[in-house]
Length: 75
Image (cartoon, rainbow, N blue to C red; front, side, top):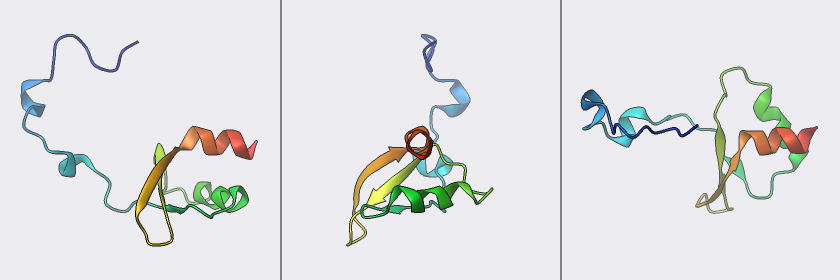
């Protein structure tokens, strides 16, 4: 089932900007983090993101890892 319908965007949402909807307190993952340490992300009930940004040692975004991918690795 597609996320977007063929009917377009609702009128009330047409002028919304991404920063209005974005999460401001995002948990980031360092590129050198071990899978075992990623498990700690799921111990905090307040962290329920669908994906986590991956940053290098300079704090620059280098990718995103989906939550489901981490869960699969931990099984």
